[in-house]
Structures are given as structure tokens and as C-alpha cells.
Length: 165
Picture (tube, rainbow, N blue to C red):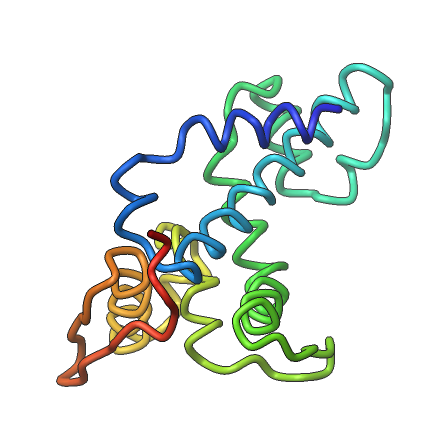
């Protein structure tokens, strides 16, 4: 129940301009990212309501919630996504876009990994990337989110997905 409640909130909060400007792949990346936030919040809800210990499987989130008594945690959620889910998100995006299965043992293509990094720009894992990588990630994400070419490091990045409209 809780995860569906959080997801319904997500769909109400999506910026109307984003819904018109974004490509399907940009929208999918955003929804998957927000789905992870909803998942983490559902674990927190279950912890408080049923005494579930599932939250302990995410030590950064668990420590944050113990210290703050659950008041927000966007940063720790982003750290967890950056540390545990970037490749999984990238595989899901590649499979969504191409229609071809991507196994856990497969390395997703760079563009999908770049899209999976979207929104994680304040995490230590993201900041450990080179400036060229971060510039490329920003350009790729902006291209799909705005449905227009972007330039970084002397390279133009075009959208690879159809617009949402």
C-alpha cells in the first residue's frame, strides 16, 4: 500500500513542462529514480508501523533514520542509489529503450549509465567521477530531459528516444 501511495504522489508532483519537454527515456529515468525513493520510504513506513527490520539492510538509510528519527533523507537515499543501483537502473533503461533483455552480467551501454546517474550529482560516488564524465552525464541527461541536443567536452549529445508528447 505505502509504495503505491508514494507513487501516486510522484505522478501528481511531476512538473508539467517536464511531461511535455522530456523524451520517453528521460521520463523513464526519472520515474525509476523516484520509484527507488518510494521504495525506500515504504521500507521506513514498514519499519515504523510493523517493526520490520528490512531497513537494516540499507545501513546508510538506517543510520540516518536512527539519528534523525526519519525526518527526510533525500541525500542518504541518493547515496544508496549511487552506491547500489546505478548499473541496475542503467540495465532497466536499456531494456526499456531497446526491448532487448539485459542480464545482470551484462555491462549496460554508457548512455544508459549516464541517465542512471541523473539526480545523483551531490553524492560522493558521483563526485569521484572525472569532470569529463560528469559533464557528459549532465549533457546526456539534459538532452533526454529537454528533448534537445546538448554539448559537453567538445561533443554534441543528441536524444536517442522519442519525445513524450
